[in-house]
Structure formats: C-alpha cells, structure tokens
Image (cartoon, rainbow, N blue to C red; front, top):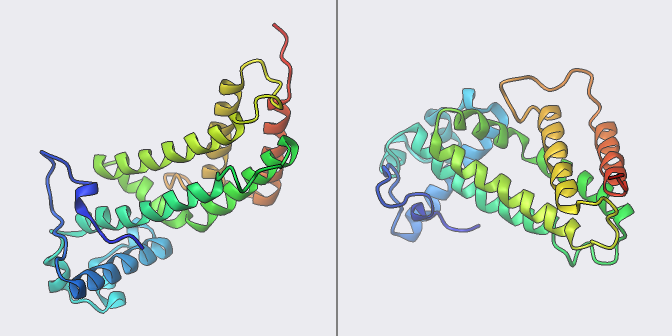
Length: 225
C-alpha cells in the first residue's frame, strides 16, 4: 500500500488539517486508522462514520488520531487518498491493453462491462460514502471526479484502440456515450448515488448483460447520414 502523503491532496493555499507521521511506527499506526476508516465506511456509510469507532477498530486512541487530523472530515480526506491509490490500481488492471489483447470487440465489450460492474460492486459502499460527502465537500468531490475521469479515459482508450472493429461513424462519441450510460446505470443499481436507494427489483446480472449487448450493438451500428 502506498504510504500516506498529504501533499498529494493539499496544494498551496489549501487548508491543511492533516499532519503526516514522520516515524515508521507512527506511519503504521496511522495506516491502521485509515484502513479502519475505510472498513467502517464500507459497512455503515458516511452516516455511520464516527471517530470513536475508528479508534476502537484500529486500536489507536482518539488522542493519537487527533495528533494527525483536526477532525472527522480531515480523516475522511486522508482515507479517501488511500482509497484513491487502490482504485487507480484497479482501473489500470481493468483496462490494461495486454490483458485484453486478442479479444475481438464482440467479447471485449460485454466482458469489460461485467468486470467494471464487479469492481464497482466491490467498492460500492466506500464510493457511495464519498459521493454523499462530496456533495458538500469540494475537496472530496474533486478527488472523486479525478477517479471517475481516470476510469473513463482508460475505458474509452481501450475500446478506441480497435477502430477497425467499431462501425459507428463517430467512434469517440459512441464509446464515450457507452461509458457514461454504463456508469450511470451501474451507479443507480448499486446505489452509489446515496441520495436514492438501489433500484427496486433490479437484477444486477441481467442489467450487466443487457448493458454489454446494448453497447456492442451501438458500437457496431452504421448510422445513416
């Protein structure tokens, strides 16, 4: 796991409520705090996030936590940075061109969307918590947007590397629309937008299968002028 580095989130002129540990022992202790924070977010979401529970799970006292952060929101931002490193690594693995080398578009598109759905489902509790907090916290929203953009760019680059197989007259537009549609549908089904509950009666497996079929048909559609 990449060590915590507040400079990746804090730039000139930004308020800093996070103090990086300087000693290895303190570093390990704070990483336990961040891992406990992410575990709690996965289980209980933003509404159930409390420093007392993070302290209990990590075995690090509240007083020690406050030597590293000014409060709950700063701990959330530090935990989000740790989570972001993990997600960016998952994005790279998901859209690694070597992984999909030799797969024709007809198999690539459904498989890629199914893998994307599994990735979002694995991390849905944490993603939803940060989306909820990001509605009122610009820093958390900015990091979340950067993660979304990274995933979008990798997804679209992977498909656009097969121009001879895409028959839509505007491949960039078609691939971009596929990503936006797929992500929005999966976010709704998994309740990543925590302002609403997961779609009632939704069958994620069927949805993923249909999204793969619809996107493939769209990419292969030779639209008339």
